[in-house]
Image (cartoon, rainbow, N blue to C red; front, side, top):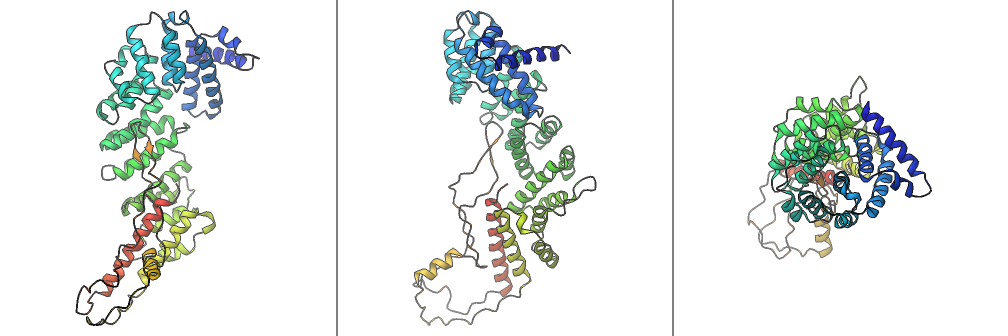
Length: 457
């Protein structure tokens, strides 16, 4: 009740200040630590799913920046105001404002000055310098509001070089600031670090906690990226029952989308069992409301069985998919899947008569060679610039998009020899027609992998 009353009072003052003709009212009424505390309260509401509070966050950052630019040594005699400056910096504040305000502060504790130096290095993109300064400072010895942010920053900085220590620091951040945006960020980053370490138990625990508490955070899409990547990377260590337990805490629409993404990524990596499971869960739905009419679910579920013994059923299912409800990438994927299904049931083509070793090879026009290289056995061009959608783990536990310039592998692995190349064998070609058909199907499956990677999320 006391916290609610304080929050209400501060919000009332902020709303009044925000509508005042000048910023002077806010500056005269509220101290820096009061403004920063208000910012934290708004951020906690955002983490809990109150997206409508995001404009207030932007307004508060603007007001705090103005207030700190005008703060003098007298303001920073109150330790709460200097700690507020540090928290503002670690909350995404302006590094220029932080550095200028620190230079005006006098008689500040030596440890607080060290933290300020580390925060400035962190904000301007000097992680090595930030780690060097902040490493010896124990967040657990600081006031909880400052310690929580410092643990979060240190954990993020150390994620790559010392992931074990990073996870410990993120645990401290959660302990010092439960139910806040700090905890939300710490959980989100813990998920990504657990994936890079191959720690399935930690991944499952952090994912469960995140879904329970912060599923509606505006940053939940970053969690979803890490979660899908983790399920694929750790698929041998995470049971389908555990995966179902985690997703069952989501609302039906989010659960469906998560399973669709897992099915698609599993298809990319050739994880047929996981792809089939995720596709079935996406189609199954909850509370009697199936998603069998969702063309994405139908398409992805077909991928895991496109070369199975039930191919005729798969072909029928693919033919009934509403193309108009698919993205461009998924329409291309549907075309490729139908082409493969057709090749699977087509009888093997008869081989051409053996060419005598002494028969000269006719020169092949360059344009024909280029055409051969540019298409695969099904006559489909290779997908230019297609890359896997699987994101790399970043030090913050988030993801890094693949380089857009990464070249795509050729859809047809066969090499086109120049006309002057000697014959490989003087005898007749004894390649088995079935083997040739299977090689062709493999090349077409490779093409599907490329299309899956190029398709949008």
